[in-house]
Image (cartoon, rainbow, N blue to C red):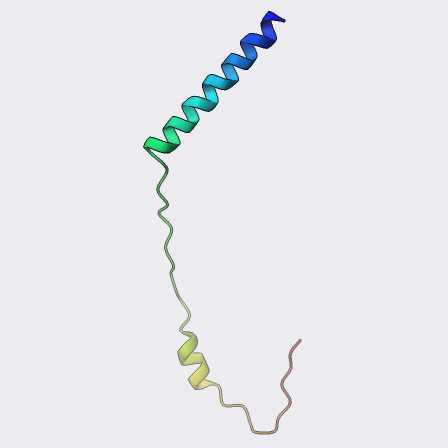
Length: 57
């Protein structure tokens, strides 16, 4: 029973340390959007013939 109590206390201390760390110094994301395809230019360059069926597969 003593080992279960010790394990519970260790888990509680680890959870408290994790919570305090996340509240004081949360991780900051370095992600950003990088657009390598100009969809506007593709739209202007596409000139489908009128009345032609579009393939949606």
